[in-house]
Image 1: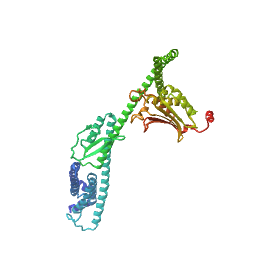
Image 2 (image 1 turned 135 degrees about the vertical axis):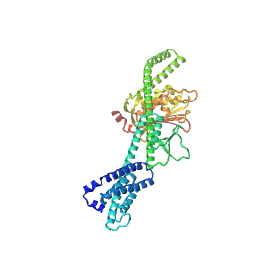
Image 3 (image 1 turned 90 degrees about the vertical axis):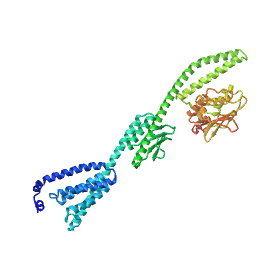
Image 4 (image 1 turned 45 degrees about the vertical axis):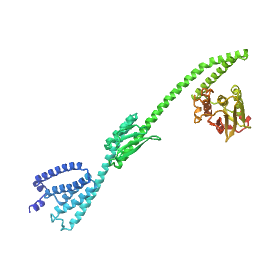
Length: 505
C-alpha cells in the first residue's frame, strides 16, 4: 500500500520525500560512472569490453532499482537508452549489441510484473520490449558509427601531424645523415620501434633487426634509381600503419632526391662560373698575343724573302702561324659559346666554299693526297660561308695532323634525303674506341705514337658551327681502317632553285 500511495501522489510530493534516497543513489551512480570511465580507458581487449557492457547493465539496473518508487517504467527505459549510448560510444558495436539484449532482459526481470522472473503476463509488454530493443539497437549503431568516425578522424589527425613534422625536419636537413635520423625518430614515435636504413653504398643507420624477426622492408626510391632499404620491425602492424610507413619512406626518398638535385645544380653553377672565367681569361690572353705574333710572322716572312733556303726562319714562320691559328680558335670558341656570333646566312654554291677551304689548307695538305668527290649539280645552300669554310679547313687539318705523310684524305659533298652532307675521311689509325663523341669537347685531344695531339679546339669549333646551323656532326671509324667525319645540314637550308634566283634572294 505504501508503494501504491507514493506512486499515486503528486510528483512534487513524493520527490521531496524521496530526495535523500535519490541523492544517495545518484551519488553512487556517479561514482560508479567515474569508475566505469576509468575501467573503459583501461580496457584494451575485446573480452574486457564485453564484460564492461554487462557491467553498465548492472549499474543502470542497480540505480533504477533503488530509484524505482519515484521512477516510472518509461523513465527506467530512458536510463537504459542512456546506458546504450555510453556503451556504444565507449566500447564499440559488438559490446553495444550485447548491452541491448541484456538491458531488455534486465528490464523484464526487475521492472515488469511478475517481478524477478522472465515470464510476461501482459502481452503489451512484448511490444515495449521490441521497441526498447530496436531503439537501443539503433542508438547503439549510430553512436558506434560516430565513435568509429571520431577514432578515424583522430588517427588521421595524428598521422597528418606526424607527416607534417617529418616533412619539416627533412626540409630543414641538407645531409643524408640528418635525414636518416629524422626518419628513424619519426618511425619510433609512430609505432615505438627502431628502424634500420641501409643505403646501396653500404652506409647503415639504426640498429639492424635480427634476420629471423618479422620485419617490413621498404625501398627508398630516388628520381630514377633505388637509394636504399628501410627495415621496420613488424610486430602486428595495422594496414594503415604500413601505409604510413610507406609514406614516411617516400618522403625520405623525395628529400634525398631533392638534396641530390640541389647539389648537382650547385655544381653546375660552379662549373658554369669556372667556364665563364676561363673564357674571359682565354679571350683576354688571345687578344694580347695576336699583335706580337702577327709582328713575328711578318718579320719571318720578310727575312725569308731576303734570304733563300733558311730552315730556321721557315720553322719560326711555321710555328708562329700555328700559334696564331690556336689563338684564333680560342677567340672563335669563346665568342661562339658566349653567344656573340651571329650567322650571316646567304645562299652559296657548296663547290665554291669547298674550293676556298681547300686552297686555304695548301700548306697542311702538301704532303697528303686529297681526293675531292663533289656531286654534280649541287643545289645552293643557305649557310654562313666563312664559318662553313672554317669548318672544312679544321676537318682537313685535323685529318692531316693524325695521318702519316703520303696517305690519302677524301672530301665528299652530296645531297642525302634533302640534307647537304660533307664527309672527310682518312686512312689513319682511327679514333680510340669509346671517344667518338668526346673528341668534340673542348681541349679533348688524342694522338698515336709521336704525332702531335694539337690544342683540342678544332673539332670543338666544328661542333659549335654545325650546331649554330641546326645540323649535326659525328665521327666513326671505318671498317677498313681510318675514320670519317660526317656533317649534315638540315633540309630546310637546301635551295632547289637556280643560282641566279639564289643570288637574287
